[in-house]
Image (cartoon, rainbow, N blue to C red; front, side, top):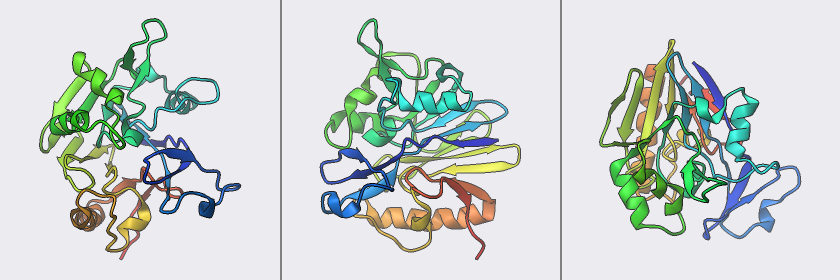
Length: 250
């Protein structure tokens, strides 16, 4: 398995839920609104023996040339958008789902950014996100999928094909899900916003931005134990320093 971080850069986000680019060599946190968080926006591509997987889709912001930043990041790695076979979605907050679709220049309608891929989304998360269109959820980012044949709705926990496991966790939002991908002796774990940064795996950290802070903390502790037992490589969506890593030994 080849693990490819697809960083869209560092951003600050405050109570308005706006993501503002942050240049760590030039910008200063004290100049951002009080309570701002500094996060990386970092989807991942996994190239396995069977698939080219995309794990979450970033903000959907355009790059310097006008194309989607995530398209450019993939193409820089020799992967065309049409090469992606499956898009695995942890949850539908705007910073994870913004790149799922793009505007068709001919019709002006929203179409899938990865035209040959199947999109795997929790059924209840989709309904929840549409019903709560606003700051965290932008329904226009994903509602368009409901009318096509690219959407696969998941429930609970289970397996997609061979070697792709999904698990409903809740915690960060009510219907958050995580993925464990096994291929060629490698186990890659994508915890979305339940396990977003390496530093959060090291202590009993509770975040007030989580739907259930205590549950998220307990899930991280559980995944630390399972990750050590299973020799997982953790993929960190919001870590500004560590894209992917195994847990250090005790």
